[in-house]
Length: 185
Image (cartoon, rainbow, N blue to C red; front, side):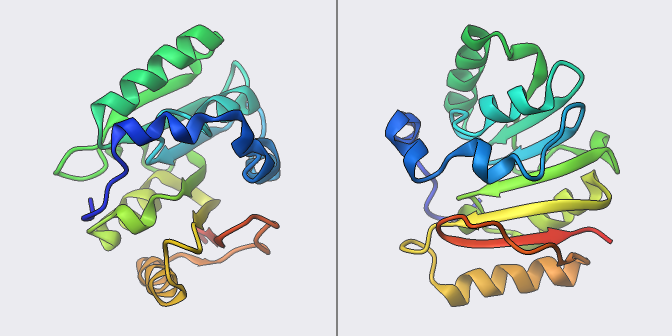
């Protein structure tokens, strides 16, 4: 991962209900997610998007929630248990040897990388891992905060993703920040 990783203590601030006025998970991710899907969420933190995703995929779907910090995953696990969604969420700790999703080759229907790409040091490895997990025709939604990620860094990340094989996907939904939808052809 990169130099500036969100510390676990800050994860609690990201869960505040007021955030839904700015970033409503249902509006942001709803257009991409259907019941029964397998959804990949790298950099899930404490699950601000994970729990809504688990509701969207329903009992026959699955959310693979990944983070580099065990503390974030621990809190997410407790929150998912309390919400009755734990069986729909596969928690995975990302190690130094890659994303650890080789078992998901061509099995993922959608991936959401929200506020995480800027924290990744090896962007080529990151995008290659997601590429390998996605089914053909599946989308990767990338959302980065404008105030934190300059346009040129965002564009550089998109160029790296395109070098892996991603193509510009459907029109990005109206989401605050720097947004791109990429597709695995």
